[in-house]
Length: 429
Ligand SMILES: *[C@@H]1O[C@H](CO)[C@@H](O)[C@H](O)[C@H]1NC(C)=O
Image 1 (cartoon, rainbow, N blue to C red):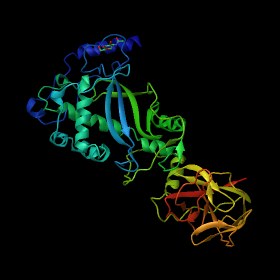
Image 2 (tube, protein in one colour; image 1 turned 180 degrees about the vertical axis):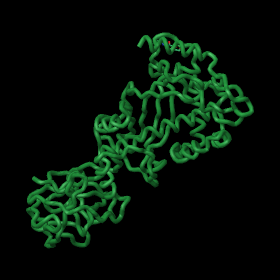
Image 3 (cartoon, protein in one colour; image 1 turned 90 degrees about the vertical axis):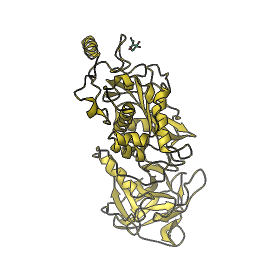
Image 4 (cartoon, rainbow, N blue to C red; image 1 turned 120 degrees about the vertical axis):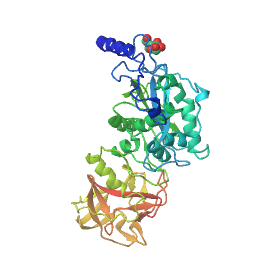
């Protein structure tokens, strides 16, 4: 550790004038600053044991960096299957922070600035993933605000740290490039989905289950914020080696928890179109399970199952599975409820069987499932993601107009036309 610190000191001093540039001023004109000239092997911000003098290559006092993301559902912003960017904030090591550190650099016209300095890829990405609440203003004003409020407080983005001849605003372009670069490594939606946690209007989650899912992806504990019990923001914390321009962001545990309660957390559904995600880690069987479940939600209208018929138990309860979570199941009349589930008798084989409860045989009539009403239908069982799902006419989708709660029960309809779409899992008793 001592060796590392000494080396860092050495590197720091040899880089006291770090911006000797191989390019001449003309080549640099209107060219994005992509290299700081700083070492990325020195001391990480907030971990130094003595004062560091070159704050172009050592982020201070804002050495605890937060990549903050939104989950905006009302109004909904951004793709339905992605969180969006809030910003990148330079907290001090003790959690206090500065804001709006240089009004002379509160740039406007961020889109033009990015385009002019060769960062139109970054701009394209921002237009999808860095969204303002439309009630608060345009995306452009939000981008301006994030730079002016937080970016101008980053020591490593001071104008004096840029290569000489850099175009005006180059350090802000570097800021936006870095925020996008970091955000792309933080697929919150996918990390939660990999653990079976997907948006829903009715399911709730414990903080521990959400943090565990995110920690699996990030390696460290992020902080989750809630409004009215619904998660709407996440902060991933870092220390930084080198400059915000091109340094190494080192994940750390959030120094404090966010505002979410320990349980009963809602993760509400967004409207808007899903986008194909850029995440690369999609290999686990958990993911397969999740995507199978996803096809039964309301985004899919005809989810005809292609699974293979499976063996069935003779006695079972039937659980409703929505967005990867079990939410109650069927009572003896065939209604959906969060009360104690009924035991069903299954007669036949996995590819064709009948169902009955203490109320009598069960069937589908006028699209509604019911038991003891005089109708009897045949069903099949489909193995999916480790579950045995009930299928009617080949489809595993069932739906209701509302989610049940307390003593309120809901009629189960076949297909996915209702607001609440789910599958029914046959669980041997
Ligand atoms: C780390 O470096 C910064 C910047 O020089 C300084 O303000 C801070 O006091 C240093 N921390 C320690 C523990 O010396």
